[in-house]
Amino acid sequence: MPHPRTPVQAPREVLARYYRAMLDKSADGLADLYAVDAVHEFPFASPGFPPRYEGREAVRAGYRAAWGATPVRVREVREVAVHETGDPEVVVAEHVVVGELPDGGAAFTVPGLLVLRVRDGLIARVRDYMDASAVAGVRR
Image (cartoon, rainbow, N blue to C red):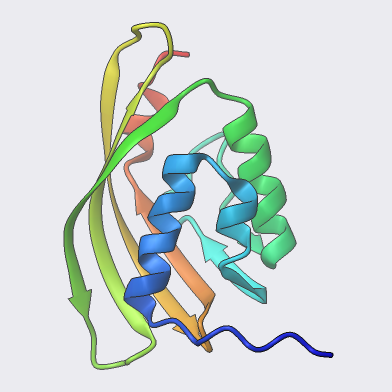
């Protein structure tokens, strides 16, 4: 017997689950929000960061590698604002990620902006504008 289809989630619901995956440092939780053929772009990519992930499994592998390579933990994602657009599939989210290094290491903040397109309850495209200089400044 086929599984009943999960209700389609609105972009704001998907955004909340996206932030939860960041807090949990869960590459699987994050990737499962994406459509099979989704694209995640980093327009301000810096050395050591890929310019984009193409496909759900690339998102999974990329975040698993990135999050596995650092002891940094995301302590909080402060949602500054979520802007609705004229397109019901798209939201623009301003946020500040607050992280910390383990064992009493310094806390840090990384401002960012996401342009998130959600189609049929799954992320179809993300443009992820994070402050790469703030990320690079975190001592590991």
